[in-house]
Image 1 (cartoon, rainbow, N blue to C red):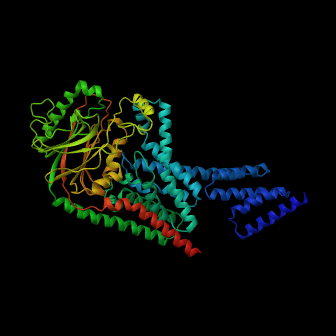
Image 2: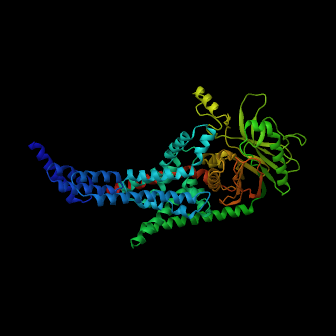
Image 3: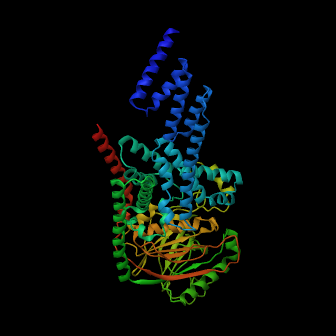
Length: 605
């Protein structure tokens, strides 16, 4: 017993000594809180637990702070005011996280209030900037979860309708997916806080680099980037040529944190720090350089050959195999009539959406069907035609491809591209070779799903100076697919996406796909044409400006008239750095982070 008392008093002496040396010593206060009651001094124990609560609250560990107050109350202390203070701080932190999510939700389609995108991370940053890494990661993850739940709300209906999964299970699957994808924002706050704490470097230096690395390394099925919040602000997008979409995201982080620090200094009536002034200068310089490069691209567009492009958006809705069998001829008659209508507008190139040709197209054909054939693609139209079709080599195997076919004005099929990146469970069942029985059950559950053979790689479909690089479905939001296209030789002069967005209904997904694809067109420095079955079809330029944008219709409504869009594109043949610098940018950010950390730690040593 005497030995135990001596040890307790020794612990008290060490704890009090540590507290005298630094009042911020959480471990010392915790040791004092545990030792004091054992020595009979409950009043000092209460005071110590309250101090532990205060310090835990300062570092963002609000639950640990409430636990410390519970222990203080167990010793007879009055902790009501402290509990209110901790709960208030927790509420403010959660509210700031929710406010950041709300800002970003308002900045993305369909509202596109992009200035809020530049403020989106500011509330979250202001509450996590002084937190320890783990609490910062949790609050960042919570913000990311709210953002993903908003952006992917459509996925529950898609899973229920086409996966034939009951509502609660579909919602659960989406919740799990959103929880996983939220880790990008969580990693941004947690890793940034860890680096700032360990090597004493500014958030303004670390945070943009960490987000770029996190966005590039965490794999998604449907990737999205913080850059989507400013996709309508084309002057900010020009940096995409230097580092891809993640470079735009890094710029958004830098601007958002700089604005937050400016507001914080003004609220405290303090002068702006040197770091804030440098950060603002860097952001303005990056935008100015991007605009200078944008001016060069605009000049190249003005000097290039221009082509009048038309898009047939048929608004068929969801077309099943049975619909194609019963109504296929009606569909092709409508497509042909609308193609002729665009021809009367003086269009040089007409684009049909993904798999819009309602029958299997023979891969052995080198010419389109004759004018008298019921499947003739055109009537009076005399220009080029790019169509989406499911293709198959008749009499040779069972492989079916999701293809884009370029038909020249004289009827020759001058090129074909087969989709490479297939949609899991929509166009193939993952791990079917390894688990055939499971795959068979999955196909029975999802009769709408296809069994598509992937293509071998990106391709350029050419007819004279018209060199088209097609992408199908969601390939235009995948950075590696875009970068492969940018490295093709001869280089394409036009990027065209053929998509069937009927799966997503009239949700946010089609508009967000347009926003993400537009960011990619800046990376490649090519005009972008997007032809979709039910919207949103569009024509945009190499600076990220959408010149023509069609409607988004509800595919559940039948017998909707088609929409026709037309506009001019420039066949730009300028070299873009994006396909080469884009893949390297995250690695460069990681190297800079490592260099900064090493230099600071060496200086501290």
